[in-house]
Image 1 (spheres, helix red, strand yellow):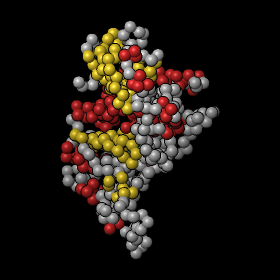
Image 2: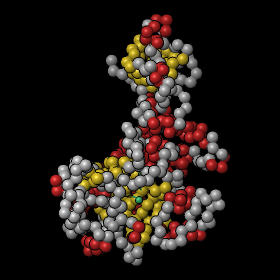
Image 3: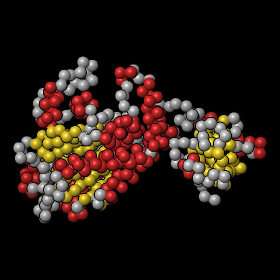
Image 4: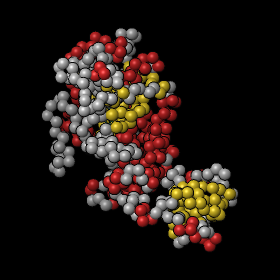
Length: 480
Ligand code: 4AD
Ligand code: MG
């Protein structure tokens, strides 16, 4: 017989029928009731054991964390708290879990801090919180693919190992098969890559954008969704060294179209989880409410998780130019408690996260799309505006998150792009393939990158990016 899932059984499918289910024991009480979970849902199914007719050796091994297979029938439950339960006929111990050892782990059923759970990242998916987060993450990634598929986009897989630095920020992890203790050097004393695996300097990609652009100029509408790597030494709750990025790229689309796309896309995927993940969202909302209770009233979030999602879904993102944003920030008063120390002196400065948070959380109180940034603080590939000072860039800022999207209309004019690269000392030989797209049938085109983990943070209400990816990679941490 095939296993049923807890999800199926709780929907009442198979009532009064023989069923079989495998899962992990969450709790076992009164020698009679097993709370069993198989990962298919946040809920457990209660299995009622006929302990008088069950082998003592088996009963002994029904302990928290053990994997078991249960055969029985699904019946309406007489007890409170659940509609259905399994009346057990046979129990098989698939994998025991020594209770003394379990006590030393986060499998022990009590409240553990998120920091503690991170130390046992291989076990934390068995907790309710991580089960909920990881199911939501999976559903969100499905929604991402569904949105693009429904809207005529093609999924392209851009390389992980590249020879270029798409963002020009120099935050790359090198890829080499040289013995690092014995690296050949050339006459100038620099590393000689001729003998290295690829015969040149290579690194892990920081963005699939440049390659995606070349594909958009052939397939029209494309997107990537893959791992990206940044060797930035940012030890914050918003940065990972390895994160997943979604990057759509669209030919014949300008910045306005790009903003429309980003807003429509974000709303679609958030609506998807509101429609499909009620149980996990409810669990996470209650978890957050418990957490909020331990904070002083003034620091508590005014909105519950579902309210936050509904609010984003119901309202237009506010579109504001960088210049307008600077005016707003200049007029704002610094916060006495120094929480928002947001005075900006000069037009041209890059916004710090406290400025972004002020605009989103205090001033507009909704997601904000900032556009037309100073050229000097943005990447080389962005389209220069007529004022020759600003570029057609956009960042989307979200409450509690800050920047969730970075994108732009791309510089499609060969000569302008070439002179920008010259100005920034970007090797034109290395990027000749990219420049080629501007020589052969160039066109207006745009795209953006959305950090998947930042989206998962928003959707789950979690506050540390390390808690929305199975195995976070951060400075000094690649333990699992
Ligand atoms: O703003 P970024 O650097 O933009 C790009 O990489 C463009 N090439 C994207 C494009 O236009 N196709 O990164 C895009 C997004 C950010 O808005 C943020 O959400 C996320 O990627 N991100 C990170 N997420 C987690 N950890 C990090 N270290 C991140 N760096 C960027
Ligand atoms: Mg950015």
